[in-house]
Image 1 (cartoon, one colour):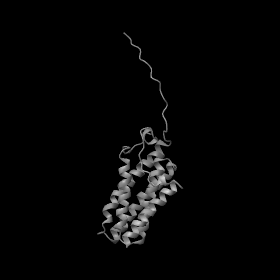
Image 2 (cartoon, helix red, strand yellow):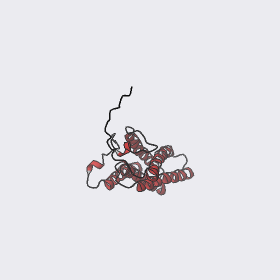
Image 3 (cartoon, rainbow, N blue to C red):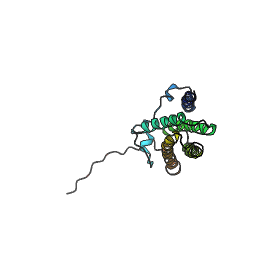
Image 4 (cartoon, rainbow, N blue to C red):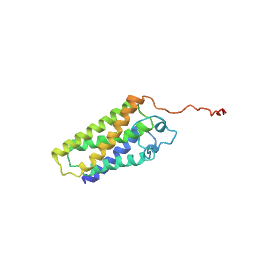
Length: 178
């Protein structure tokens, strides 16, 4: 019964966070990060970028790792609340960052919360139940959340403004000098 409750909470957390980004639109639930070559993600000089064709796989891995963590988590209320809140926050971060729905400061703070809360979960789980299977999935989430933190902090502190279009430069012919 506990696992059914966790699956239900995971689904509702996913739907809730997507409706926070796209209210009254069903397309938001099916959204995946697939930026095209002319999107701001490809045009802006960001460090730590994952190739645009692999972003969907990272997003799905993030969702599945948070689901597996929730399924195999011990019944500790604090850990459940932290993992559920980080699931909702990570589901918020993806469209907020890639669709420029929120500012880069908000995305940076959200990714910082994700990173810190997952470390707190690992610390609590190591103290209370070190044999838990969910400890295996939390390092995957730490890796993904660390990438989110790196790219969000670079975007906010260094890039500052996304490049949404490039100026067209006319082609000129070269003069031949003999």
